[in-house]
Image (cartoon, rainbow over all chains, first blue to last red; front, side, top):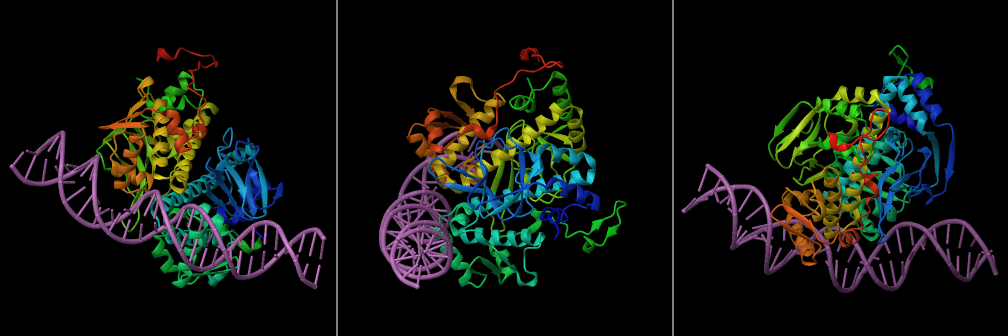
Length: 255
Length: 255
DNA sequence: CGGCGGGTTGAGTCGCATCAACATGCGTGG
DNA sequence: CCACGCATGTTGATGCGACTCAACCCGCCG
């Protein structure tokens, strides 16, 4: 079982086996967190970078009127502060949406690892670039997409992001979506009730089905058109094979 | 006249005169751009990092249905791709909202300058951190703030950001806001008409006045409360004095 | 003078929020 | 084993915030 962090990086960087082992060493120490608990609280001074190994987490804020906004969604393999841009204090919180396994990456370790090889550094820059692009596209959704468009865009994005780490069932276009409709509302800037009705809308038109916590996309192209989804912002250059130190390809299955 | 880039950095980093001169060397080559022109087009492969020296610019996208969303606003002193996280191709465009003077920073130069001193590197990380935080707060506005709250929040933010680079008239709480109401709409995810009416609302309650292109805040505390504005995300630690190479303070006015 | 960019206003509509009730499934404790 | 509470999802009724369309005004400039 390849670590989701590595699976993701393979879509944006060409890494050798040694590089991957270097990354793995960063993610040794882990801890488990219950759903709805904070990984890092608001105002906290984190000493470790949280990296999601299993479960879904998020970055969020709560306004003084009680309204919550989820700023970014963290899936397995996601570094909660890409490339370790750690603030002196957190101006938002990191929370677990489901029970999570979180690796604690030492802040100094990630910087020093970046020095080891330009390829490793590039991989981290790529990760930062993609995370920023996802946040920007999220912002565009909140500003200029309707409720069904926001949902459609999210489902298309999750399809690709989860696919990168092997969490989409092959041809089925189907994946687990373990968060509540209330969470979806806070993520997409909508009320829970309206999320519910917009989901029904998408189901009625046959785009998706959502039973229990499992989402299936029946008409990917239709959904993409509906949601103005263009996958360019994810900056994938396709799943890459692993490299030997000399740059030649190596059989991935050997891992 | 101190370069706006340096003025801004002084609010987050402690730099020596030598550090500042190093930064200045990055911004030598400039070009001028007319209002509404693109600094970097969608899909382009930029060879230089744009740094705004004068005027207002933005990062934006246009959906296929023609709706435009401004993702971030760039004021004088802002690096359009903080710390030079340059994608292989642009998944959005950079455009000038007013006539602009843009410095063209070489992409390799900024990385190599970061190697020169940990202080310089920190300054660039700080810049990246703040730019991300501003974008996130923008996202929260689009998701969870009403029209007047969004405007209020923007005006509070501009007050601080422009203040950092000396573009706010001292005690007057007054600054130039050279963009149109249509641009404000695209920035805040609202229609032009609704921006107009919400501005009137803010004027009627005496919070602000806006004549021509000049905005004055009459009740800063009131505006902050109204807009749930908390300045923590800007991560300023106050205007700092310049340092000598040994770390001791130097008279700022000597520049 | 006419055109144009920017701002302002009115009327009508609709997307989404809010409030409220109810259904369902699940875990827990009596 | 059932009763209960609780979290989640669903549905209906109502109201408001924001959009759209459309007209009109003003100052500026060619």
